Length: 74
Image (tube, rainbow, N blue to C red):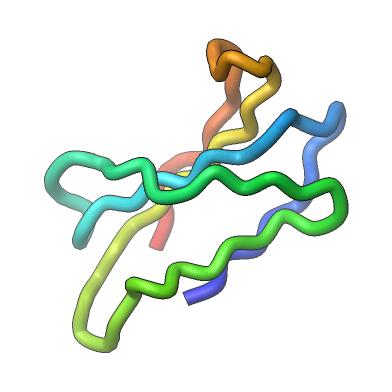
């Protein structure tokens, strides 16, 4: 599973990806993404027959206190 997103302006320090199984349960922070060219992340744990929902957060402060997140999506 690959997730690709448009880079917002101003550009964030990094992105944080969250994943929940099938839209239920507690979200798990799965990866910080540091990129200055393309917003992209590959979920290597996504397997056939498993369903996840995801959320991408753009983090604008080094300590992670300021961020903007997408809605949950499949």
